Image (cartoon, rainbow, N blue to C red; front, side, top):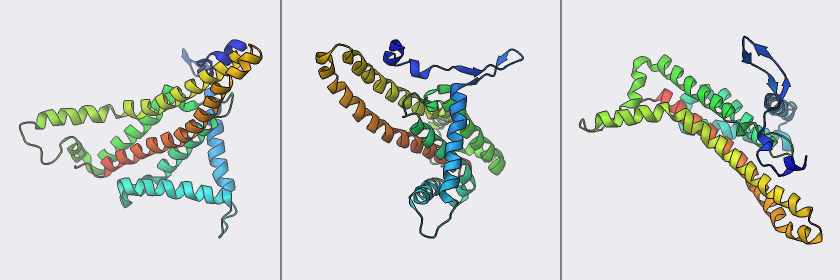
Length: 252
């Protein structure tokens, strides 16, 4: 148990709660799957309870819900214009899911589901294929004009097109790794300093005095990580809005 308090990686372990095996595939229900369900319930239930009264003069909870709604709408409209608003339910759900997931992970002993690369990659692939399908449905083969920027000299056009294609198909990588790496690194750093506090606290009065500095660092890093949790949810959703704009307006 003491080793778990010091080990900064232990918090990311995936534990099987309900073993499920189908056709040789492991589909077990894990602690991270459980917290994904919890996050969906918290986000959806919280928004429902906050707006159920529909007061003309909103209370604090309704004001926060309306701010999140308006913030997501403005983010999408500024990036993709009025035509992009048809994707608003997806962007709003994505932003709220990530925001709540990141903030829930700040509570002790609660896993941060966005610190698992498989989850962030899945979300990034959902955005990628949605943009691809929406662009092809809307523009047909003209969607691939996205890879041919206008005004480029013919001499360097093949090189630019190659770069654009590589950039487009590597979007899920950068999109997912950015969120995963930030959440993983932040929580490891906090756990490392928390481990210092625990280890020094076992050394008596002198150790307790020496634990003050890492304790201050833990408090400061936790406050910073809350800001990063909100910022990373915004960045992920904002990039999704930018990619949606490419589906609507594939020409540069």
